[in-house]
Amino acid sequence: MTPNIFLKFETGEETGKTYQSTVVNATIEKIWDTISNFHNMDWASNFITKVEAVGEISGTEKGSKRILNDAFHETLLEVNAENYNFTYSIDDGPCSLSSSEINNYRAHIQLTPATLDNSTLVEWSSQLGKQ
Image (cartoon, rainbow, N blue to C red; front, side):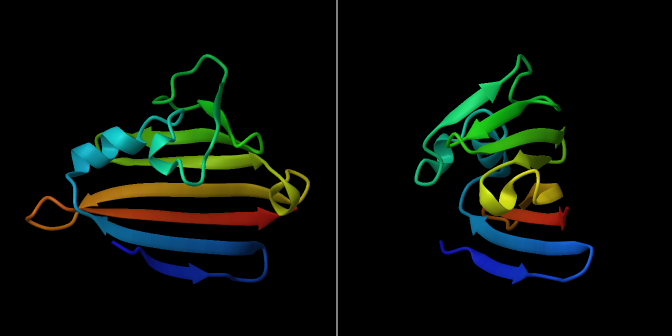
């Protein structure tokens, strides 16, 4: 299924907000099992070719860190398995996502049961600030 994408960019102190959503034909438990380990991006192998876990914290615990594709340094800020959501930050990255260019980048993933046929609404939103 093609995702429904809505992008919203604002000017001022907050320089960007995004929102994307899609309905996936799978149970919320199956989707959560697939995406909830911060150190496992197998589900996004078309885009993420390498995941390096940083430190000793498990990929399912607040504070875990990873580096994606040798470029994006991220931290898991919050995880709530009971409500099927998590929040992470990009701490550093290439070019316009470097720590010298932005701060306070936050992304949030939320899963919600969508229909009686066991589909799941997957929502991803983010916002960032500029240095």
